[in-house]
Each structure stands twice: as structure tokens, then as C-alpha cells.
Image (cartoon, rainbow, N blue to C red; front, side):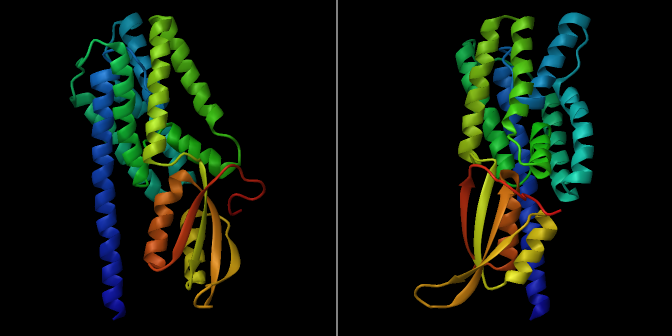
Length: 292
């Protein structure tokens, strides 16, 4: 009986990993379509490391007359961030992040840059929307697109500080540089693309950087060990009792970042498929946010 359960559990994990790899690849391809068909032809920039890669590609072409693919720059920029992720965020998370960055760089290389529309507003809106669908799909399946995603998660684990200022700082450099290299109208359209992208990612994934999970289970010890081992988060255990059955259980309350939501769901499914879980958005956290 135990061997059958182990086999079934292992099969579920393998099936989940295969799906995860599939959606990481699909997400990278969709993201590339948004970039190469809409944003790059219109000189409208994406956010984060992708936008920075676009900027470097433009600078090399315009000032040095050297063509270096955006995909190459994206890969090079992510190398130090991937090293950080490997040592600080875990090997599994880093593996899928490397896969996402690798396939994105590959698709950016092989998918031709071609203009679908001459309307810059349509390019900004559709480019931001389509690329965000790719990012949101990747995040929804517990992976990251590298770059700012990894930096954001690292900082959220390190301390409870607002992360938006780091993203705003990098994107401000991109927008300002777009205005200097081309014209300020293009910089304003870049802001439209960034806003559209952020809204779509919010809809597909989750708005809050931090979430609170309240898990009611009969398998408190197993659940606690897995969450601490795989997520490194502190947990508060509270007594709970069913109103109809009067059955006494325990509730685990844990605060996580949005990037850890997929992994937490997998832990709950594997440890106790009958656990009742409530996930709520968390505005801010004071005190301990991680295990020492």
C-alpha cells in the first residue's frame, strides 16, 4: 500500500514538473512574440532586464554599428542574477528560471523582428499585453523570468522592504534613455507599455507581493516540516475547531511572497489533499518574515 502511494505521489510530482516545463516554454514564446512583433519594431521598451537588453541592443547598433541580439544581452545580464538565485533561493527555483531565460533568449534569436502595425499606440498596448501574458503564465506555474523577478524575490526574503522602488528605478532609467536616444514621445509610449504589462501580470498572477495562507489540516507536523524546508518561512500554529463537526484541528498561518504561491500549493496537495486553505493579500508585514 505504501509503495503504491509513493509511486502515485512520485507520478504526480513528475506530471507537475512536465507541465511546468511546458508552460515555461510556452510563456517564453508568447513573451517573444510581444517583444519582436510589437515593442522592438516601434522602439518601445519592455520592463526590467528585457527593456535593458533592448536599450543595449539599440546603443550598440546606433553608436558602434554592431548588431548584438537582444537575446544575447538578456542571457549575459541574467548570469550574475542566476548565480545569486542558485545560492540564495534554491536549486529547483533557479533551474526553472534558467530554463525560462534560456528559452526566451533562444526565441528572441530565432523569431524574426517584424512590424505588425505602424500605429505606435497599438504596438505599445499589444506588445505590453502579449509579453505580460507570457510572464504571467510563467509566474503562475511557479517559475520566474529571471532578472528583476529574482532580485525581487531575494529582497523579499532578505527584508520586508517595498520592492517597487527597485523596479521603478530600473524602469525609470529605461524610459529616460528611450527619450534621450529617440524622442520623448517614444518614452511616453514606453510608459504605456509598462503600465499595460503590469496590469495584465497582476490579473494573471496576483497583485500583492506578499500573501498570507491559513491552512487547516490534520497533518500539522508534516505540513510544518515541508513548508519550513522548502520555503524557509516561519509559521504560526493556532487551534481550530469545526463549527458543525466540533472536530479539533490546527491552523497554520504563514506569510509568503507571490512567487512562492505555486510551491505552497504543491506542498499542501502532496501532504494533505483535504486541507482547507485560505489565501489572502497582505498589505505589509512587521517583525519576522522568514526563518533565521
